[in-house]
Each structure stands twice: as C-alpha cells, then as structure tokens.
Length: 635
Image (cartoon, rainbow, N blue to C red; front, side):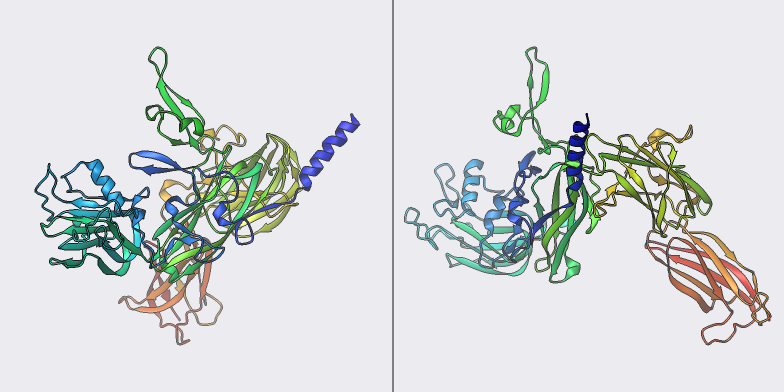
C-alpha cells in the first residue's frame, strides 16, 4: 500500500513539475506557412449555394508570406503580376450575361480560358451555322473578384496576337470598339454604386489593348464591345497593386496534447502606411476533438424512413452527392469564435485539448497591418476542468451600500493543479471582505490587493472535485449590469490564470433562482440610463468672507454606469444666462466624487454677491446629461 502511495505521489509530482508551456507561431517559433504544425484546419466557407470545407491556412491565398520575412500581411501584389485568375476563386466569377449565341457550358469554358493563361481557348463572339448574325454590339465580359482588389492596368487581346498560337491565327479578330468599366462594389445605381468608365474607344485599330488604370480598389472589371463587328478575346489580363482589402489567416487546430488552461494571448503587429486606415483582429475557438465540422450522411432506411448519421470526413467525400447532408459546424464539441484582445485571456470555453486562432486583416490599397508573432502560454494539467462562479443577490439599488455573497465550485475529471488565489473585478473599491470558507469550513485568507477596479484574495490550495469556496464582501453598485468576473490562479504558475465561468455554483436560499445564476448584478429599471445619482451641495448659501462659516462650497455627486473616464463639468451662470465661471471640468470615473470651491473666479477675485445657477454636465459618448440648481453668494 505504501509503495502504491509513493507511485501516485511520484506521478503527481511529475505532473506538477511541468512548467508553463509557451506556443509561438511566427518569429522565434513555428513558421506561419505551417499553421502551427498541427492538425489541418477545417473551416466552412460558402461556395454558391453549398458550404464547403477549406483545409488551408489561407483561404483564397489571401495572405502574403514573402513581403517581409517572418511576418504575414494581406497579399501584396507585384505590379507586374496578372491577377485575373483570382476570379476563379471561391468568391469570384467571370461571366458574359448577354452571350446567348452558344450554350452556357461552352461560354463558361471560353470565359475560364480568358483568365487562366490557356492561349488555345478564347471567348468568341463570331458567326456560326446556328447563329449567323453575330452582332457584337453591347456584349459584356464581367470579371467579379468578389472582394476589393487593387489594380493599375488592364490588357486584352485575341489569340496569336501576343502569344504565338499557330493553331488559332485569329490576331485580326480583335475588339474593334470597346469600353472598360470598373466598380469597387456590385453595380447598383440605386445604392450609389454606379460603374465608372475608364476608357472608351469606338474605332480601335490595336490588336493588343493595354490600358492604365489609376491605382485603386475594384471588385468588378467590365469589358464591353460597342461595335457590331465580331471578335474574340484570348486573355483579359488585370495587373494588381497594393494590398488586398481584406484577408484571413487560420492557424491549424493546435493540439495541446490534453486538456489545458490557456493563458494570455499576445501578438506583435505593425502598421504599413497610415495606421488609422488598417486593422487586424484576433478570434479563437476551442474544441474537444480534431474535427470542428460535422460530416453526415442522409438517406432512407429499409422502410423508407429518412435518417441522418454522422460519418468521418473521409467517408463523407466518398459519398454520392445526394447522400451528403449539408455541412454544419460541430457546436457540441467546438465553441463559437470569440474575440481576443492583445495580452488578454481567452474567453472561449476551456480547458480543452484543441484551440484554433484566426487573424482578420482589413485596410486600404497601401495601408495594411503586418503580424510577426502569435504567442500564448498554457498549463497542463489545467487549474481545473470547471470553475463555476456566481454572486448573490443579483439586484441592488445604485448608490446604496450592499452586501454580496460569492461562490466558486471546482469540478475535475482528471488531475488538476487547483487554485489558491482569486482576482475579482469590481467597479469601486470594496469596503469589506470576510467569511471565506471552503466546503463550509472557515479558512485563513489574505487580501493581497484592494483597488477600485479589482481585489485579490489568497488562501490555502483548493484542488478537490466539487470543492466549494464562499466569501462575502460589501460595496455600492454604481451601474447597470455590473459583472464581478474573476480569474483563479495557482501561485506556483501565476502567468496562466483560469477564467471563472458564470453559472450555478451553490444555492444561496429560496430567492436564488438557478436559471439566473451568474456574475452580473442589475439595478432597478427606474435607475437604468441615469449617469448621475445623488448631488449634494454642502449649503445653498456661500459666504466667502473668511469667518469659517460657509467659506467654501463642497460639491458631492455619484457617477453611475460609466465604463471609461468621462468629462464632467460644473459651470456657474448669472440669472441672465451668462457663464460666470467653470468651477471644475475634468474626466471622472464611475463612483463618488467631491469638489470644493472657495468662491473665487478666474482672476482670483471673489465672485460678486448674488443668486447664481449651477449646471453639472456629464458628456457621455452619445449624449450629455445635465443637472442644475441655484446658489446664493452673500458677504
């Protein structure tokens, strides 16, 4: 028995000895091109009416790996690169909407041949036995890239004009009159998106037409014949410039080996051009397996009953088209995408074995973002499998002192490291923390920090399945929807905290409704929307004569619901409405504020005796809230 205990202790010691692991993608780590060298991504993208699975890190090849070594950015186009073939990608298309002289299948094959570099295939508007009248006037060829793409040049020509094509000597069958139109959006004159004319030539004598376009984003390139003469087009070449307007990079499905607590995510980025015109954002999702897509087969049973069963991805792609059920995300084993701020914790569910990140780039033609590195720390085994927390009560009057009870329940399905520190978010400094208990037993604890935005409490290690921590604290509530979110730490590995999950941790009594369990506290509906609570002036009579009685005016007020520092101004007006003096004007945070005024104005002189109107203004983002009253000044 003793030997078994030693073995278990040894295994646990090995687990606890594992240091914090760091995953780095990009500079100093795994190359971007490999996506993390883990499981290939599976992302659902729309292709026409169907959803398809993309297993690349860079859908539509929209990411550039070579513009700056070790960094990624939206694809940057070499000005000498013909990018017309990008209309063949998922979101692009090429069409000739008014070509009705041959079958659509043949037209589509011709059109594909005009952008894929095949000089044997050309779009043809020529007489045939079935269609002897090949009037070419008004015939359109439309290149739709599906996204905004920078261009600076368009060239088109018939076969055997630029590239020798002895089997198709049609160099004289060029377009004898043309217009070139572009549009950054889909054409819609009603939505202020008309096409823009770049060039018009009614009497063209050049087989090879090469047109300069002022560098700009376009989605549509339209070539239109404006004469009746038949023609053909071997290639329509579109030359790119600048960065793609938008791009997405997906990491692999990063396999952490087992369930793990993921810490803060960090990335290094840099702006190219004007920073204000570009952006890069990060999202993350977590999973229990290596297949975020649900593959299913549909059919009918022996007695005609319809069925849908889950199959592997490999099996799915072997099925007949009619047997393939629509692809959907596996919402049971994979979370939704969650936004992540730089140097912030992941809010996707965890701990889980797999995580995946996506970087979304946006910008302008010469303004973009580059990313050098994506990095995060993780702990394995995790701090806990679940740390479910709730606060009670969940309704409290603003500006009133209130007492709250807080509970955290640990759940584990295997080895965990446990936690011995909590950091709880607040909107004002708490006034008392007391009665900390674990499984109903009082334990010693230490308040390490007590700041206006949070407090930190240390206590003995909690690592048992179903262990329950409870404590009580006091503070006023100052805004609607105050959330006492928190993080649990193991002090041996403080770099990787685990976010507390809101939910039902314990019953606080008959008034505790399980369905409402969580970490948010509301204020009564009548108080919602108000930015200023109580306003108290020490006196309505100011006598600044130095006798020690009402020589100063003390102004006290409570600010509610603010999430950021906000300008607050206290102005004094005479009865004619003329501003006399600004007593104070400065940014304030949520909570109580106090100011004093000695009756002196800007020049240092005492304000003249009389009756004055005071106005307190709070300048929020979308509106201004005002409060006013009167005060008398007497000597």
